[in-house]
Image (cartoon, rainbow, N blue to C red; front, side, top):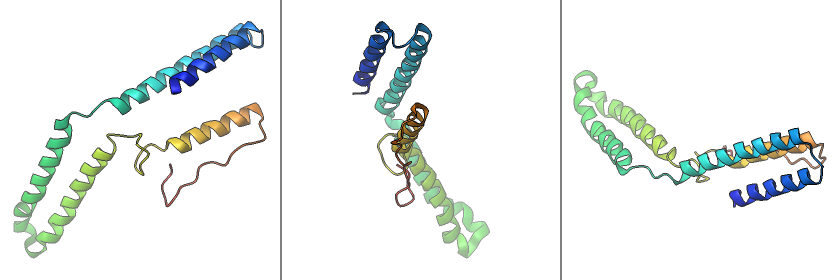
Length: 149
């Protein structure tokens, strides 16, 4: 769908140029911008469609769990009775970092930790409408329960 939209925009730009509605300099600048947009779209699609090798998911998870299991043995000498609390806190930090890495593997799934594409595209829409002098400017996206979508 995004490629079809970009092709339609390119054909409209060509039509505008052929009718003399835009000059050569603007046509070239718009074509360059459209090319940059197509390249950015391709990069985003490659990021989205590139699978993560299993060993990048399996080994960190395995090593973090082994570390969390062995952590109390290393802490018991210094913390004594507080070992369960200290090892739980440190283990939780490692598990949280592991989960953050897993969440970042797919940044376009529209989950709460992903890239806020709705907010980004709405900002672009607002900026474009302001540049064109359009009176119908939408409101910026607002966080829903603390999450910007």
